[in-house]
Amino acid sequence: MSTCPHPFDEAIALRPEPPNRWHGRTSEAYWNMVSPYGGVTAAVMMRAMLDHSERRGSPLSFTLNFLAPIDAGEFVVETELVRANRSSQHWAIRLAQHGKVLALAIAICAQRRATWGQVEAACPEVPPAAQCPVAPPRKATGFLQRYEFRIVRGKPFAENADSLSHVWVADNPPRPLDFASLTALCDSFLPRIFLRRPDFVPIGTVSINIYFHCGEDALARQGAAPLLAVAQAQAFSDGHFDHHGHVWSSDGSLLATTQQLVWYKE
Amino acid sequence: MSTCPHPFDEAIALRPEPPNRWHGRTSEAYWNMVSPYGGVTAAVMMRAMLDHSERRGSPLSFTLNFLAPIDAGEFVVETELVRANRSSQHWAIRLAQHGKVLALAIAICAQRRATWGQVEAACPEVPPAAQCPVAPPRKATGFLQRYEFRIVRGKPFAENADSLSHVWVADNPPRPLDFASLTALCDSFLPRIFLRRPDFVPIGTVSINIYFHCGEDALARQGAAPLLAVAQAQAFSDGHFDHHGHVWSSDGSLLATTQQLVWYKE
Image: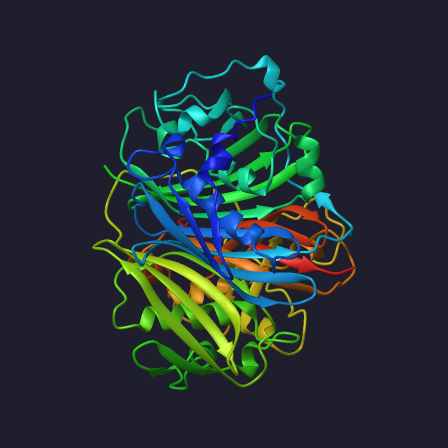
């Protein structure tokens, strides 16, 4: 194994300015068309909260609104612990460049405790990742190189009858799963419009919401193995569409549910 | 028709203190067990944003985290227009009592524009509301009196095989739908744990997320007719469960998709 840091760890590296400011820099390895990949922006803001000396418990809910493109270069993250009690914490997190807020998040951390439980969502029956071919990257540069996608259902850039997709996804190179990388992976879904229509149109995520259904133990069990990402649009209308998604561990445990709202042009 | 204000309008009445503060008072008519009904708190925060002189466009995304119980009495809402461009606005909204933040929201307003569209979620086939009996209120006081529920699927306080419910819901007394009341209605779903287990346990919503798929015109068409509310839990684990829901107009248009995360004790 190399001793070089993983590009994801480089991309979410932050220099703390205690108590509540963090300095980072955009990563070429996770660049998207006009801005960093949204998942790595989400992960950077998650990371700032996770690294905070006052953080207790593990992430439960994370919602991020993207306000405007982030330029290549330095940025500042500000974390605010708005309220805390014995079992949970409420955070507000902002990312800014040159004093302008470009991303706005609210998040909850909580102590997990053993209770009656039941998973009602159903994990689709799919072949194991090892039996599924890796899709060639859709682009030659940028963040798509940083994920390995194995598409089980949902042909990209085609007029599919629905937008439901089943995809095995893993960091490339492999990296043991943690809450920052799981956050980023929740934004790795193909924009649903590209599963309904053959042509490229400009799109941009405006809001992403993640509920975490796992603790550190489940992430450790998963390690660097591929995750099964399932998503489907609910509606495309008036310039925006949403999707609802599930992220499953390789042994079929529900790790996260996620929604996002995406702007599209045509 | 009476000239008295509707109790919902009384509950979400705000006295503006320009430019960004709003003063309100909790409503006995929408009281829940230890705090106001979460839907009316969400509606109050939505209302403050909607009433702001700088607000442009209609609500697109709204996420609210509940930090701590709100006491009966006065509260203050603070609205912040964090960023705006020609087509969209990003807001942060906080509700506080005695200087303590108790609810924290981020929201997006946007101009709706005609584009290619497709609704992929399926509206369940159910009898019209008029053919479904009104359920007797589960409690004799509080906010449950303020909604009329007609349960088509999902028996409350029973060990159902799943938590999927189909319910016609309307304001009581009837009130023409607007974005504030639609926001409130998105919190009117029976907590999913009560569709899986027969016994009452303490619960509390910690986060709610709403994507609006409609403009003012669709709300005007709906008027005061019952909405079809559909929801199902994804997972119950370690003291929290989530649900994913759809709100349909009486003629089968998707008005909103919504998620929430709920704390439970046992």
